[in-house]
Amino acid sequence: MLDEKGRCGNCRAETERRWAYRAEQRGPGCTWDELRARRAAVLASTDWTQLPDVPAATSARFAGLRQRLRDLTDLPDCAAALHELGAIEADLMSMTQARGD
Image (cartoon, rainbow, N blue to C red; front, side, top):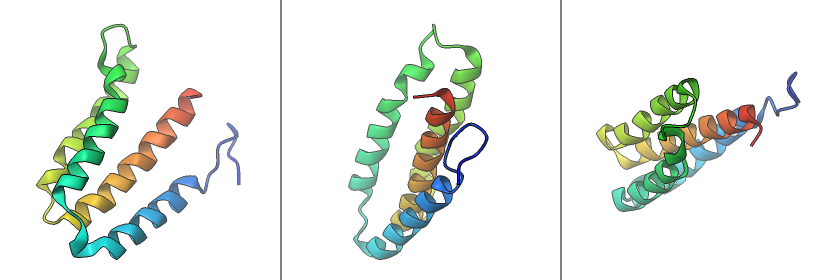
């Protein structure tokens, strides 16, 4: 189902469902090193949003997402952090689709 901007309304829910399943499947097999590597990749992909020539509104929107990424290691276990990383990646996908990327 597409929303008024032509984006998939079910994409976020489907992405979150897949990530919840993956986190469930990985359980104790999830390692903090793997999680940190994925987190670093997502942070690197959003570095451009904090450059001085980026509009303040864009920087602010992505700043919250980047802080959520940094806070992942505060979660009690790797499976919970992996699930949250999936939600963050879904949010990132929504934000970039809203920009038209």
